[in-house]
Length: 473
Image (tube, rainbow, N blue to C red; front, side):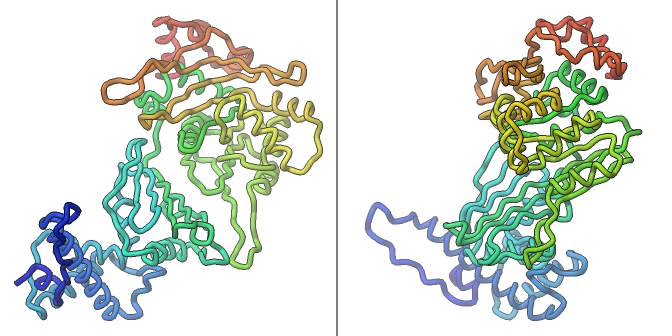
């Protein structure tokens, strides 16, 4: 009995071998036939299980109940189909069918297991036959396949409908958050020319700590001590970098340095920050409803937060007019505020801040706007993502002031890339530039003593030990 007949209950028509050099080897044809037969069997089990569950299941809105119970139901259905048709199936293929059908019913289909893989930080579905993941900062193409574009769209709907969102031609773009905090972005035709596209940035159950970032080479021990002192001394900081450079992770680490007795208001598009302090109020922007009403933007939340008696305001990311409100908050007694922004360098971050502030619709002279920036922001922490997938602080830059309508900057710490090793990993080091920040007396007044030797290279081992002891390291 042929493999296809044993698996599917009906024969699979095999293509006639062609006498050309492009004909696939016989082993590949047999493997393709097996996969096709398994797909047919999986669909049969899925349809039969859905029929038996009836109203208990709604594939678009998920199911209520224990996943293990549905898995048992799927396995029972599979056994009956195999028995009725006198089919044989090895253990691995049996487990595969049960797992994938259960994922379709109680999970997110072909990508369900990726959401539970702790090494996967991002999932990118570009189409039925293109699923990529990010592992440890690097992109990999997987062997995962959807049946067709309709299957991708069905998975997208299953993800977003329980969140109270919809996606169709009238609303072809959705940005949402899963219950575990993972960010979901979906876009379909006509905006996505090549078909439905899905991107999921996973939410870490156990957020990275400053020790983790030092271990990964994102920052040096000296930089970590300096940034801790800056946050505790209420220095206003903006974290800049490109997409995927680790800005949110860095903001999370910086926020962890805020003393536990302060009231913190966090404002985000999608709540990702995981602060461990007790007195934290988390605000999240709201998109418009299905009728296009009810939107609450980041700017609205920034303005409202000023009425909530905050000690610190932490904005996940400034993208528009809220930048001006954030600058004004920093200039009116809300020292120690933190935020992030997309930029390619510290200087570029200042240019973007100008542009975003002008989006507030207030006609300010350029010099007045630059004065706002120069007096509000004191430190820029810039991150970059390197070719090996690693993320590193490349600049810790102080905003010195305004000279002849130009905001002046000075680098306190920089990252020097020195090459790559045999495995393609970036080699380099963080080093101070020798410049002592002008706000160092502010750190001293707040009780955070940073030895001047920390800003000189090479470091003094004695000063590094003293610094660690002072900060409890």
